[in-house]
Image 1 (tube, helix red, strand yellow):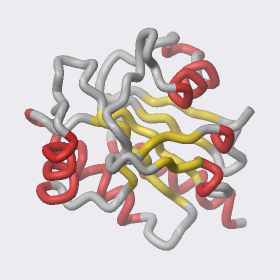
Image 2 (cartoon, one colour; image 1 turned 180 degrees about the horizontal axis):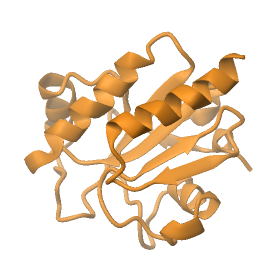
Image 3 (spheres, rainbow, N blue to C red; image 1 turned 180 degrees about the vertical axis):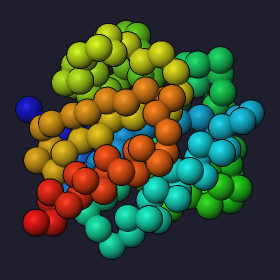
Length: 162
């Protein structure tokens, strides 16, 4: 099984099959937009822009499981992400990343990257870097800095491009 076997609905309810990202390095992130999280969204957008024109895509999954730091209202999510933070990466529907209602792609991501992180996500902005083969997954905690993340992504993209 690979990431390409999954699909999810975007923020507007349109289903996206992840095979549309075949050959791309994907950064999948559970996000939030309330309180101090605007900075994190802006940093993600900077990452997306810095790799513009390369086989890289961020997929954001708004989640309210951590201190309800995301809105329930789709229009508020769109306003915060697109109007306020000017993100250009893909935004999906409000998502559960832990518990009985975890969406299938997050079950798979957590299973593929269990390692030292355990089987649950402990906070917003946990990042999963999925290789271009759609099978290898590296998980980083929300505390990993964006400079380090940028270096990791750049190294992985160079492998794809060579």
